[in-house]
Image 1 (cartoon, rainbow, N blue to C red):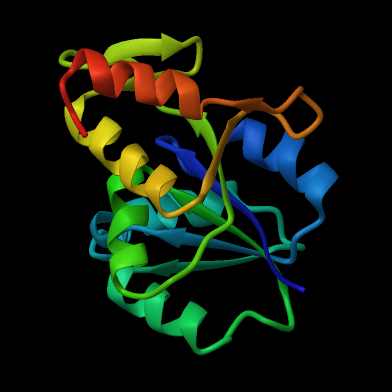
Image 2 (spheres, rainbow, N blue to C red; image 1 turned 180 degrees about the vertical axis):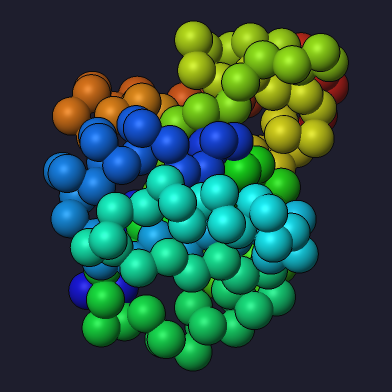
Length: 167
């Protein structure tokens, strides 16, 4: 058991997660990893309200989530980990956490970002983080819902890194 899905979605918990992912992947816990959310009681309350009663919610900062994963706290559960950005995943990798695949689900366009795919907009920091993941052998796949076709986006990321002159 353990970690079933690792997803980047800047909205964290919303309709696509609850109605799409949770009805297909069948996890019993969502782990939100975010220093910001872990320190914001209002955001925590809002995320809790969006959760179905059949799924537990844990909200952890990067340090605590890294510790729990490394120490197998979730091994007897089926867990979906949600991140709001790729940089937080790199911080967990630097803490010793290993990931095989990351679903890049929703990184919406805001000023200063470039749209790479319909659901993925990035800036230079995002590209650096993705390149670190690629160098660690992590598959980067993009799809909005679990039944959508998986698209490996590593080549798209590498092309954008080249455009930005990022190694």
